[in-house]
Length: 69
Image 1 (cartoon, helix red, strand yellow):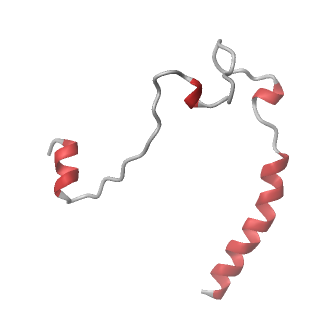
Image 2: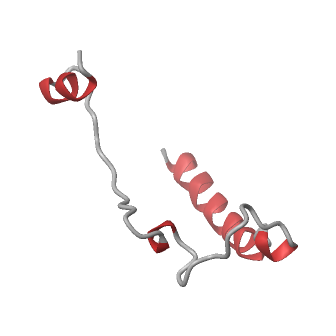
């Protein structure tokens, strides 16, 4: 368990600076789509779009109703 924790902490310390140094695609001249970005450059900039999440547990009655089983 101690070795696993040490590995996880090492990966966290090593990977964090690398992730901060990577360039974004848009910074490299790659512009997906044809429209300009919104004010926040996020999916929530699009009017009428709602973002959320749902947890579905296999075998539960609620999951069976949602999935139509």
